[in-house]
Image 1 (cartoon, rainbow, N blue to C red):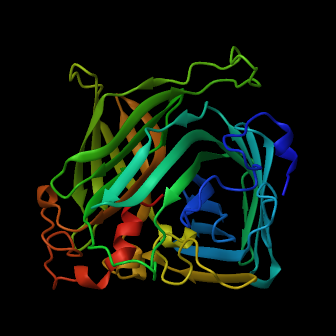
Image 2 (cartoon, rainbow, N blue to C red; image 1 turned 90 degrees about the horizontal axis):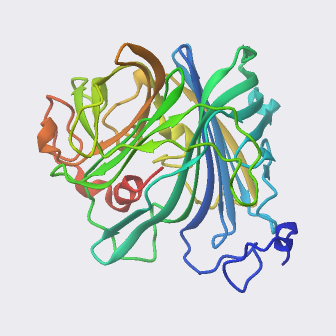
Length: 393
């Protein structure tokens, strides 16, 4: 089937753009956003799985100590650029510049009308590939961009006005990533990992850090950059209107102080270094609140990514993150809103964390023990879900 974008000379296979070039059931194409200010953290997810014929999405808001999430799923439309998923809609007003997100769920009293405007160029992260033995877990391109939100959110009768703006991070990714709970393949031995992602807004530039580490602390995927905030112009054919996209950082050292009984940070320090090993100064991170990534489907026991819920399904849930079991597998994956201090400058951003399995450097000896707390070995109970979530986001 043809779609309007087939009129553009951008084809990579002999097929129309609406069809994937390979039959991998885990092929996906995702929009992901967060938004935050010192008293608020929210997230948006929208994803097509063309070889499963599934589209799913979520909108989740953490404010006043309570996180409320709207989950939705449906059969994927023939035109993948039609991003209307029942109560959730994503619009591309201007590619890589402006997006509109509309949420309208009167049934669950959740509404939003938000406009994202980029303040940096999008940066392409290092290509992400992961294997378990000879099984391909992940082969993904991700692009990160910073911006601002304006608009209104309404949750449970509480109106949150973003007229003064809120910080934003946009993450576009596509490729193939293992979906949890595959029933037609041999189970995968659960693999420990430490995943950190930290996009931070400072006054005139933004900091980016990504790492996947093995249990021995070896970074198998690593990326870091400084990206200037700038007035963006429309892209030209030859790219001459594109401002500088920032500079890469050779490596970043992390030092995390963990909350007792948890696998999330009490405080953290990130130290970016040049190729020559020169420190660019320590970035001190102070967590302000903790957002559960299951609110956007990551590791969710019911609304995990790429699951079939019928022709159309919508549900909502609400909880206080502070009252959840922090060592239940579904609650491991978090984003903490953090106040950042770097060389006398203040910033605001997030520190996303997924720490599972033995991590000797930080004193974790088992699969789900908390900091300073030993628990019975539980690795056998998480199986493929652990391997899938290790490749998440």
